[in-house]
Length: 171
Image (tube, rainbow, N blue to C red; front, side, top):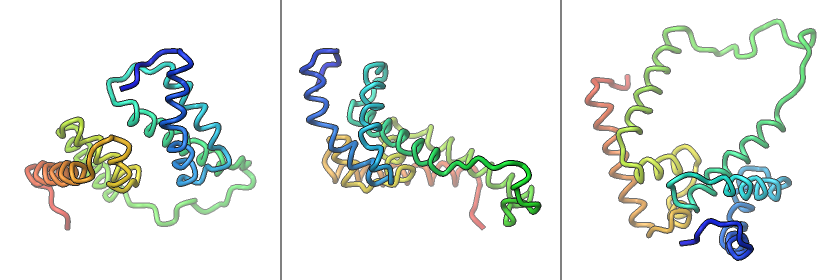
């Protein structure tokens, strides 16, 4: 396990072990042109690191968030009110009842996630929310692929049981 410090050895080891992963992740998110910026952002956040997560997980999450920020900024457009269309931007917007149901479902999933063990929650987040494959999660968390599959299966089973215990059913 690497010890955090400002020593050049730490920074060299950090670059050797993780830079290629961050650059590849940036490519996957479509932020390949800004991959070096993502790496620099990760390094700056590591300097302020005050979390108990494994360093690899922290680096992956930070890089993912930075890539998403870059993509969001690239898609933003400055539109004046005169240029805005008169009709709503989302013609297929849900009615209030559907919105309330979706909000309740989201809250239920969040509660089910919070009920998981931290290791299970991290694996579910990486696979379901960040779109990683179990093999990639295995590399990031430095755990055997079979362990990732087992944790993921158990976590999904626990979440399903939690949601079913509330009486919610998918119609």
